[in-house]
Length: 78
Image: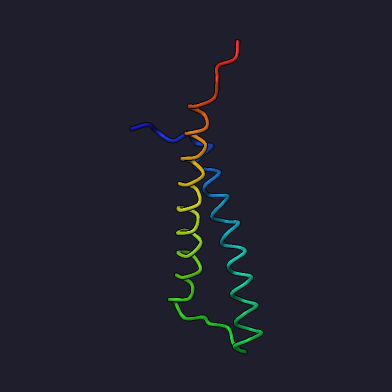
């Protein structure tokens, strides 16, 4: 099992923050514009953290696998 580099953790955290910010804005605009109220229950705040986290894990794992597969198939340069 290989260890992840600190830069990969930083990129994962950055991805989670970007997806979290986008999800927050979309959810806020939808709730305010369509529903007419803002959900401030504790479960709503948990949802704001967990949904982008799940998206980040899936996206990061898929792109990480693609990067590692592409890195292993590149020809060596002299």
